[in-house]
Amino acid sequence: MRLLGFPMWPQGGLWRHGDFMRLWSAQVISAFGSRISRTALPIVALLVVGALPSEIGILSALAVAPGILVGLLMGGRIDRSAKRPMLVFCDLVRAALLFTVPVAAWFDALSMAQLYIVAAGVGAASTLFQIADNTYLPVLIGKAQLTEGNAKLEATDAVAEIGGPSAGGILVDLLTAPIAILADAVSYVVSALFLLSIRARETLSPLPELRPTLVSDLVLGLRACWRHDLIRPLFLVAAIEAFFGGFFYGIYMIFLLQTLGLSASVYGILVGFGGIGALGGALAARWVAARLGLGPAMIVLLAGGQAFGLLIPLAGGPEWRVLGFLGAHQLFSDALIVAFLIHAMSLRQTVLPQAVLGRANASFHVAAGILLPVGAVIAGQVATIGEPRTALWIGVVGGLLAPLVLLFSPVRRLRVMPETA
Image (cartoon, rainbow, N blue to C red; front, side):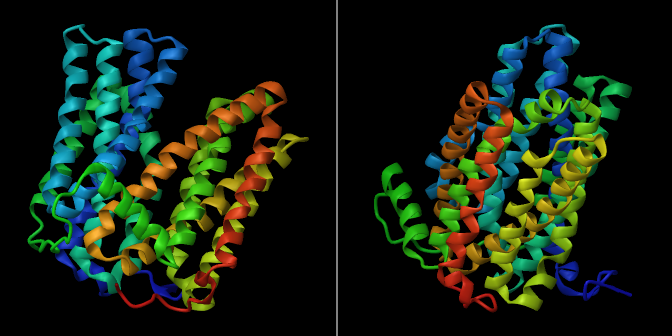
């Protein structure tokens, strides 16, 4: 039996790659665990510490802000170091930080200062893990299987997005929030054990620079992205999506809960729809590229994903229409965008030299980490002066610039994945 042209039951490919399966197993466990902490950490701050809404906002910001610093400082180190020990280190750091929360709660010594440190440390380690992981995958499985590997990893994240927050809520109800965070800490230890069991040994590429500095690493990463005819448009797309995505990031929840008057439970269900769509996109990504050709598929997927964003500010009127528009956006936009991201990441990993891939990946993270908060701040000002719907219109219409970048770039002429660097 086949689904979208692929066997529904595993038959060869990376299913037979033992080291990839170990890496994948590690990411399955940590992906679910991280969603549990994402749900439980603000609850701990609110119910155990008695945090104010402003303190919850700071906690959320600290979970993502360190990513900029990590991208600036660690891109070169990732290229010059073995990636697997770095992944294990990140897992163990996250486990240790999270473990302090239930311990402090047990002794009635938990404070917002500690939660701030935990959120910032876990956020930094998670960003370092993601950059190193994206750089390690081509080394582990070879560049010919990158699309399949990225599709499997994206499918894992999609399933975790569907079930992880629900599992976190259940654990909080049954075991309390600190114990739910303890479960996440244990998940990172198990992930580290899977990573340690990988048998392949990494051979580092010799690097030409003699005295690397922070500036030279950053310049080299940006140069690698900007000078490559296929990566430059992807970099511009990522920048556009980060800036205008900030309008969505900063306003979407306010728009749903205050402007449209939806409940928090309905909001959670809609986010779950997004996870279902992302899973479908991960499963269908290779099928779409095989039918349309790689470049046209990327353009169609990105354009469709951005176009479905128009349903957000259009949502209004009867409740069935509001829920239909928002549900369709989460389902179809997430599916198309995830399928695009699989091919974009695989293309980046394929055509860039392995020796600079870490710094190039870090450049993408730094650009997004700077532009997304800028977009969110501007969106907040627009929503304050006008209304949230106006800010969302700016965000979704601005996002339509992204597929135009690909349309007028060499990417549109790609039919298959190009030769490796």
